[in-house]
Structures are given as structure tokens and as C-alpha cells.
Image (tube, rainbow, N blue to C red; front, side, top):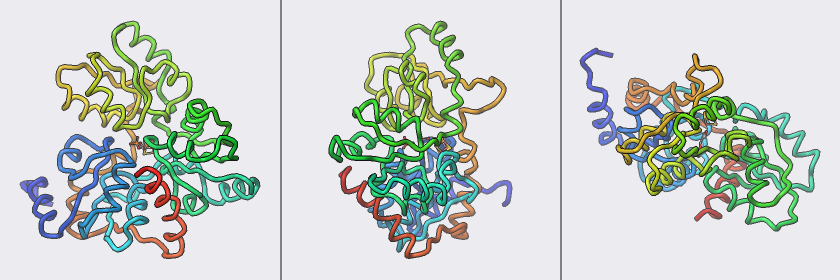
Length: 311
Ligand code: 13P
Ligand code: SF4
């Protein structure tokens, strides 16, 4: 691409020319957040994807999010700027192993976190995201036998909140399991007024120290409304951009990983997207998300059920 190409201007031109929409997740880089038409958590982005009138959906997020958009709105063209933008949590539940697990518990209802492959969704009764998981689980009777996959930290947390004993799959996210409790305690000693806020994909030992636990949009809303002015934020660091934008006078400290030399609180998959890749994906309409129609129909059901319950 020519060095003097103004990518933001070109992307905006392509949006108009192609009736395209950019759906961006809060973990994207600041520049991508700024050019996104809709910025949100997984639930908001799935809801938007299901109702958009755009012809081209450019997903500035990871693979399972773009596939979810295709599941709920199959007549639209969906492109993901980098097909390698996967998710370690989704990868922690390979479909063949998960199928054996489900078959071994035929009397259980399967609730799957949206961070999962389309094949795993096809084995699922209802999906959830971190913002509606409690609501979805509580839509089943107290004594219902439930499987929850793939995130064991979120599953544990929901078990605790809802008083359930769901069978959990042993999956986790590489970003959220890396936060260091000792280093967070040190930070808390250094900034005693700072409130710890955490995504439910974090380990239980961290969640019990948190003043607020919630999805990315729930964490953001908390910092907007709360009267405090210092926060230790235990989720992917991309969300800090919106927190600082809405509350410029508050101090946000990204929770540190154990290894101080690595940028482990960045999701390497989310950060694969760049403005350049977004421009190319819009211009050439590749890489496109395509799904086998039979698989799509099976995997769309639990997502549609989730959207119905969360309406
Ligand atoms: P949210 O739905 O809270 O945005 O979470 C998505 C995600 O991938 C968390 O790691
Ligand atoms: Fe997946 Fe973790 Fe990245 Fe979220 S932060 S997209 S769960 S790897």
C-alpha cells in the first residue's frame, strides 16, 4: 500500500461505497476502536450482527465472533481481517473431545460460552456470553443438570452466583489466567484506594478480591458510574482506551501478568487486526467467513435461543 494512503479516510469511503459496517470489540487497538461503527462486548456485537442492514460485516474481533455473525445473519458477507485471529479459550474445547463429553452425560443440558467453535456450538443447547451467563443459567430450573463449557473460571463463578453445581469443562483463556495475584496485591498496597475490577474469565482467587466482576461492557459501565477514581483492571488492556475516554480524570491501572517482561494482558489474537488489514479486507472482501449450511443451522440454534432469552 502507498505510504501516503490515509487508511481512516479510505476505510470510511469503503463503508459508504459498500454499505459496510465495522463491528469492533473492546480489545481492539485504539485506532480500530475509533473507526468501528459499533463497539461492544460479545453480546452487543452478536445482537448488532443479527439485525444489521449492512451488506458487508467487517469483524474487528476474533474468529468465533465473526462466525457468530455469519450464524445469525447468513445472507450477509462477513470478513475477518486476519483469519489467524483465533481464541485460546475456544481452542481449549476441541469439538471431537467435547462431543464425547456431551455423549457421556446424555441427561445434561449443554450451555456453552460464545467463545467456542461453531462445531462446539452445534453440540450445544444454549449459548451465553459473560454479560448474560447468570440470566441464561437461571432460565433453567434449580435442579436442572447442566454442562458449562469451555471456561472453567466463568463456570465456577456462575456456579457460585447461582448456587448451581454445573459440570465444567476444563478450559481457560491465556490472557485471563495469567494475571498475577501477588503483583496485584503489591499494586493494591501501592494504591490502597484503587478498586479491583475483573472479567469473570479470571481465576477465582482474583475474582474474590474484586469489587466488581463483569463483561467488558459491564466493567466499562461500572467505571463510568462509580464514584471512585482509581481502578486496577483485570481484563485485556484494550478496554482501558474506552475507560480513559469516558473518565479522563480517573486513573486506570492494567492488572499485571506474572511475567513482567511479557505483554500477556494483551490478547495476541485480538491484536492481530490492524487498520491496514481492515482496509484490505473491506476493499477485496476477503478473508470471508463461510460455513457449511447444515452446520450453520445447527450452530445458529443455541445462539438464537440466547438472543431470544436475553431480549
Ligand atoms: P466480553 O463478552 O465480556 O466482551 O468478553 C469477550 C472475551 O473474549 C473476553 O476475553
Ligand atoms: Fe479468547 Fe482470551 Fe482473547 Fe478473549 S482474551 S478472545 S477469551 S483468547
